[in-house]
Length: 299
Image 1 (cartoon, helix red, strand yellow):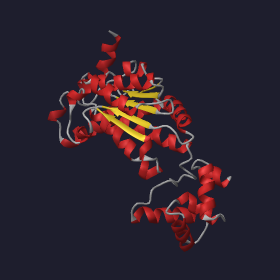
Image 2 (cartoon, helix red, strand yellow; image 1 turned 90 degrees about the horizontal axis):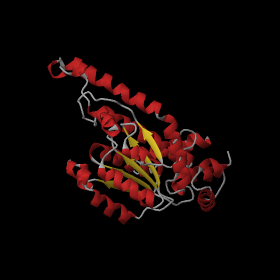
Image 3 (tube, one colour; image 1 turned 90 degrees about the vertical axis):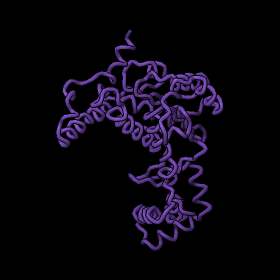
Image 4 (cartoon, helix red, strand yellow; image 1 turned 180 degrees about the vertical axis):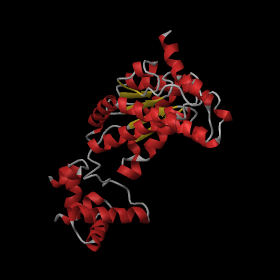
C-alpha cells in the first residue's frame, strides 16, 4: 500500500495547472518554468546522499580498476547515458571502464521502447554479460523507482558485489530501498501529470552531473578548477588545453603549446614537463599518482 502512495507522487495531477492548455503561451511557459524549481530543491535536499554516494564510488574506482555502469529505461535511461558519454571527452575516463544498460538497447536512445522497461529477462541477460564485480559501481536511474528492468539489473549487480547507487523521484520506492546508496529526488507531481521527462528529468540530470563530476574530482581528474584531463579532440579544445597549461605554469603561450605537443596533448603531462621533467618522467610521475596532477606536482 505504501508503494502505491509513493508512486502517486509523480503521477498525481496538480489542480493549479488544470487549465494550462487554455492559457496564453507566455503564462503557460512561466508555469512550466516555475515547476522546474522543484527539481533544484529536490537535488539540494539530496546533497548529503549524493556526497556519500560520490565518495563511496570514488573509493571503489581508485587503483585503475572498476567500471561505472549506468542503467535506466525511457527518459531516465537516456538522461543516464547522456551523463556517462561525457566522461571520456571531459575527464579522459576510459571507455572500457564505462558501460550502459538501457531498456530496449541502443535503439531506445532514438526511438522510445516503453515496453522494454518491463523485460526483467533482458535485464538479467545484459547484466550477466557485463559480469559486474566488487570494483564496479552501478548507477540505477528510474523516476518512479519501480521500473522492473532497472530493479532487476540493480539486484543482480549488487548480488555480484558491485556498489549500487540509485536515483528515484518517489522516496521510499523499491529501487531506493534495494540500493546500498539511495539518492531520493522528491520532485513531487509534474506540470503534466506523469510526464517525468520534465521536473523529475531535470532533477535527474542535475544530480547525475553532480555525482559524476564529484567522482572525477575525487579521482584527481580536476585541478585548480580546470578539467585538466580533457581530450583535446578539436581546435577549440586544443586551444583550451594550451591556455590551461599556460595559466597553470605561467609559461608563455608558445612554450605551453610546445610542451603540450611533447606531452601528446595531455595537459597534465605538459604541466609536469614545464615543471622540469622529461616527457617520459612526466608520464611515469602521472601514472604513479593515478592521473592526479596535484599529487604528481606535490602541491
